[in-house]
Length: 221
Length: 248
Ligand code: HEM
Ligand code: FES
Image (cartoon, rainbow over all chains, first blue to last red):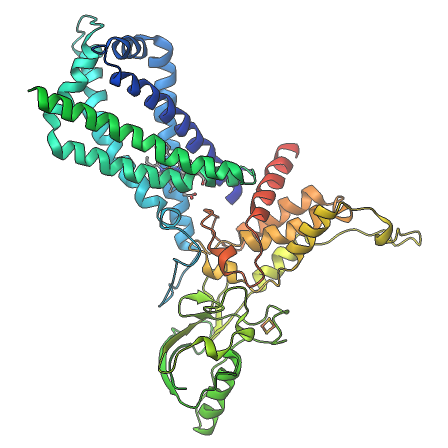
């Protein structure tokens, strides 16, 4: 089954939906950093996520595997699909009937991948070093402060890079979410409209959070 | 009216083709696109040149023989229309018009604008049929109750004329709209139940073997299909295929 075009699309869809679930919980946790309690709730959840063995040693590897499967299958399908047109058209109006987002999933996907690399370098790598290389003592209250510091130090350039990536994430999702339903054989209808809302609200949430911490810290310094 | 035609010319399957320029004066608004090409071919013949080869049969928009990628769109600028039903009043005097064959690895060019679409025939042969009891007590189809919705959906799917515009317009050269229409047409009706699972498995397998790409749900096929076949059929085929694979 997974050797067929439809089977490969199923892998794409399942890994995509899995990433959407991850993205939703990530947004919910990040939103707690906006609560005006000096990071109390955010620190509590971050500490739990960062030190719970199930999250660290089971869910985290599954997530990384999920991204890799989605990325590798996406690239593979792109190559196969390109090969199925040997001679290209002199004039090709791809616009007719198909949105930009749907025709350029590989571009938005690669931007998201670059973002992920940057984001890992910003947050994940220092976290791994802190915990598993330097074996620093547990500190339940460091997360909120570290988050604010990172956005302050990153400056407006990093904020801009984050925002651009989120816009492309929105485009990727605006097609990808409803496309994944279609790939799984679910006839789209009202759900399609819901997926478009999701594709706007979730990236917008991340943009608001990043901007909030950048501006608050910049004003306070 | 006068047109600047840029037409793909290719001697045969193995030769390298290229775009040729033709200036054509005296085109009338009431001509169909194919009549305009006939007019050009008459002129070329009179000048002792080789006429442009293109596919056609009914010229009524029902057989699916005509093709052509006109100014970057399958069957030209008018939606829901085959090339044979497209009229020159849709073009402006002095306009440059690119005419190319449908392009896909699974649709090799035979000559000029004619492509070999027998890959579609092979997909059909792989499963687009039903078994009918011919022992003498065959049930009259009209006596089998079919829900109106299913009958309508099956009929809509069956209006696919197999022209290949879906493949031509898809950025992935995917044949999912065509195959899904053919699968749906049978799987929605009682007569199609016997082969329901083997049909979808075999047809999708053949579609993949022919070298068509995979669907990324861009929707270009539905927009450029002269018969307005819905991408809902693709979702149905995915569902049928996945269920049949699990059961197998
Ligand atoms: C690592 C970076 C990524 C790359 C290179 C990438 C690439 C792709 C490609 C090429 C497609 C196929 C386009 C199509 O079938 O229409 C796709 C589909 C999809 N992507 Fe991504 N993507 C990435 C990250 C993500 C992330 C982070 C999410 C979710 C938060 C996501 C969600 C989806 C969904 C839901 C689909 C639709 C699946 C389907 O059509 O069946 N992608 N992606
Ligand atoms: S020639 Fe028959 S559909 Fe155009």
